[in-house]
Amino acid sequence: MTPSSTRWPVAVLGATGAVGQAFIRLLEGHPWFDLVEVAASERSAGKSYQEAAKWLEGVLPASVAGLTVKLCTPEQVTAPIVFSALDSGVAGDVEAAFARAGRLVLSNAKNYRMADDVPLVIPEVNGDHLALLAHQRQVRGWTGAIVTNANCATTVIAAALAPLHQAFGVTKVFATTMQAVSGAGYPGVASLDILGNVIPYIGDEEPKIETELVKLLGTFDGTRIKHADIITSAHANRVPVEHGHTVCLSVAFERKPTPEQALDVLRNWTGHAAVKGLPSAPEPALIIRDENDRPQPRRDVDRGNGMATTIGRVRADHLFDLRLVAMSHNVVRGAAGGSILNAELLAASGQLAGIGAP
Ligand SMILES: NC(=O)C1=CN([C@@H]2O[C@H](COP(=O)(O)OP(=O)(O)OC[C@H]3O[C@@H](n4cnc5c(N)ncnc54)[C@H](OP(=O)(O)O)[C@@H]3O)[C@@H](O)[C@H]2O)C=CC1
Ligand SMILES: N[C@@H](CC(=O)OP(=O)(O)O)C(=O)O
Image (cartoon, rainbow, N blue to C red; front, side):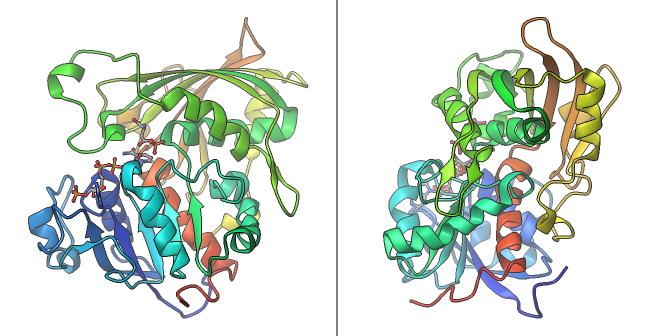
């Protein structure tokens, strides 16, 4: 699927961090988007990207190495589409300034996720929520817009539960996460804190999982999102894994499925139809493993170029109705790749018209 022969210039804000670097890797050779600008804090601005960033994985693309890092202002950064990998301490003001200046901001930060007029989107799960942008422009008077993607642990849970919610109506979720160190950004957690250890606390993570899930699985009525009626109890843990958040789930339903019925739904789920064929869309979005010892971050995290969610251990639950384990790449599916897929869906559905006009 191609939206037209148009190519869009894009920028990355927070380009030097863990998620910013993933954007740079994933945008290299993208068929629709050209990365033309990178921006970060005052500490990095004015330096070449190569000098400012401690490159973490693979080879830094030559086209980016020599770019001068800009400050994160709409005066300095002129691209109409802006991917934001900014620290949440600054994302609120910076992202609003870009949207006010007519730019489309695709944000990874938590600041606007739960705002009533801001779409919180995992394309396969709730791509239709992007239509909320018309309401956002009306309410805020912006010519640009902000679209957010979810917390990376919530992304795993929502991707696994969306098909089951559609088929059987999820009512309660008990979620225990095992989250990779890359989720804490760079340099992140001190090695002596995490090597050979588990940390049973990630600041602010459990409330985000519990609130974002109901918005993601909610329904859009043409003006607003009606949140799903699901109660979630989350336990968030940091584990010594490089990439990939794993989540153990116990789930209760309105209509209790057998494990076989649940597996059938998961295996046949295709998600929001408009996502199929987009450049970053994994095919399939969900990979179901029958082995007792999967999913595993080491073996499954890069499936679908890091965009697929792997699910296993689907079985009956003694406490609720069903148990399962799900895992996906927190920096790709749960951050940069998810944002790029949001932008692709907007482009393919003709929703980029007028973007970039002041
Ligand atoms: N890592 C993950 O798995 C996920 C992260 N997220 C979210 O994505 C965002 C980025 O996370 P991550 O890459 O891990 O974080 P990092 O700490 O690795 O990177 C933060 C980035 O923000 C920039 N920055 C910090 N302060 C300022 C400032 N005052 N002005 C402008 N830029 C600034 C940094 O620039 P500089 O180098 O110049 O300091 C750096 O580029 C966060 O909001 C995070 O919560 C969301 C989902 C998953
Ligand atoms: N808190 C997540 C990563 C993250 O930054 O999430 P959020 O964007 O919701 O703050 C983790 O530690 O794995």
